[in-house]
Image (cartoon, rainbow, N blue to C red):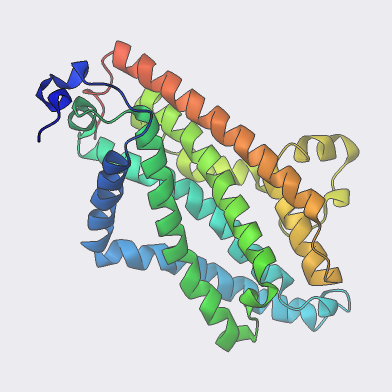
Length: 280
């Protein structure tokens, strides 16, 4: 029997908080775009693999000339791969949105019942898929190239991965908000934004290397707690739960902030008629 709600116009139908069907449809759409282009899939895995190889050889050189690094074989390689999780997660949110802008498809998307919040969730989901496709080949190649099996850390590695994925989502949502408001003139932030945070993210050096005033700034970033936790596992074999809790709490806060900013920029763009004007 047909529900009476289905006979109503779309704007009169009861609103649900979240539609898994609409989110799933968007994830399927982006998966088809990715699957239909082997250069896209190759590009995802190319840069993490190249960085792993370059930094891996640099690590071998440093290991031969530093007794300190010799105590933690693979720390730089693991740091590079985890950093790329953050970078790819950020791009995984921003690039699908930019592809919608390039094809001038935003107007068609938001004519449907899909809500901005559902769009955010679908972007984060496809970002997770893209990040796994990007980082997994490089992680596997680290073993035959440098005898480093990054998965030996087990569950801590999963915790690091998820937290850096969330950090990339938060940054990506802000970048999509900027793109909504300022158009493709802001697309450079998709690549530059994460690197602006690199010097204080403590990827390859501990927090106490930074000047005191800069440490205060760095402690507001969730990725700092992740990389400090990574060094704790690799150097001392200790998983610091307090660092994990700080990272999770900050990530939840920043994702919420990023989603609010994106939705505010969406409403602003809709009021100004920008959704139909953005494109190449």
